Length: 308
Image 1 (cartoon, helix red, strand yellow):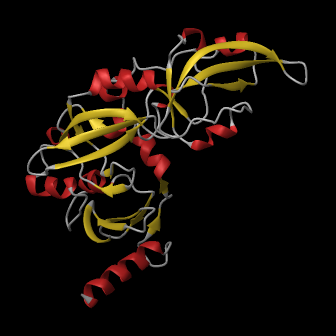
Image 2: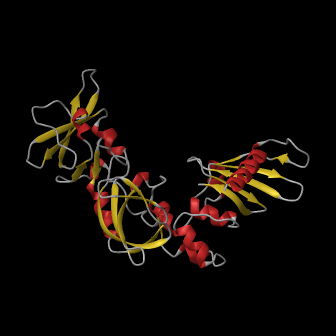
Image 3: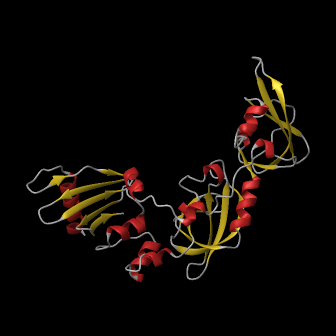
């Protein structure tokens, strides 16, 4: 083990040195953004939920529901003797009306009622005409349940291949998961302040499990946790017929092993934060580094050593 560690340390030191011995030439460092740009390809998954959008204020009907994500909503509502709604509760839209602000400008009061019928008011610093021109009027610390319901209609009961190993428990704690395996969407509920949709999914044998992921939809669907980032409509392994079942199992579990290719390692661990290339006398060496301290060292495209 000491000899292996010493070899890895020596190789890493050589790669990090810039042109410090004959035959080594440095090439510009490639960043994570460069890697993402190189691999940006439009897929069917990118447009799978395109029909799910937020409603404009003009389209809101009385009774439209909003899920409260945080008790901090009390800081954004107009002062009132009515207690503010709590996280996990729902408020329903009633109407909106113009009001004159202290500076003389026209603002808009948007009126809701709580589950017990008590009224609460959110004031937007824009006139009703201005708000009606916007594609979306966002009420802080809430989720429009219409996008959750629309997502449920499209995804509930369907099976997809999950692409992210970042899973969550029912209480929202992150946990390690698998990737590129089929999962069935069991339940769709409101998410959190960042991601409006929470998906519960089940995993069949041999990986029997149940977990959750959070997802963006609507105007925020271009985020790093949209449908295309989380799921594949088809088995990803079919796109890589040259990858053996043994190596694919490593990829599913997020593992690497000597002599895996760069493509196999990228599938297993994701894109690195940077790639440092060195042209040696008889080979091309690469150092891949990740933000969590993991690094991979390749020689002519094959993994030679790594640290997890």
